[in-house]
Length: 93
Image 1 (cartoon, one colour):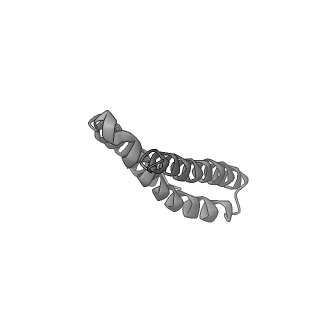
Image 2 (cartoon, helix red, strand yellow):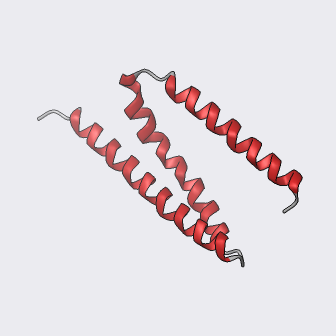
């Protein structure tokens, strides 16, 4: 990977981190849980990227891909668990 590509990747990471923080900080607390639990399914995209990274020949990429796959899977399962728990709160007894 050349230096220009690395600089672009670092720039995208910093920009995405800043924008994500700013967007989440502006969400009111009453909407935070439903929005986050629903959007955690987007981590499925991360799982696809992790599978692709795990298929590379480099050892570091394989380990990072595996770690990303585990963390993204935990995020997806946790998001669905929170959504299920939230929906149970609204059911009549």
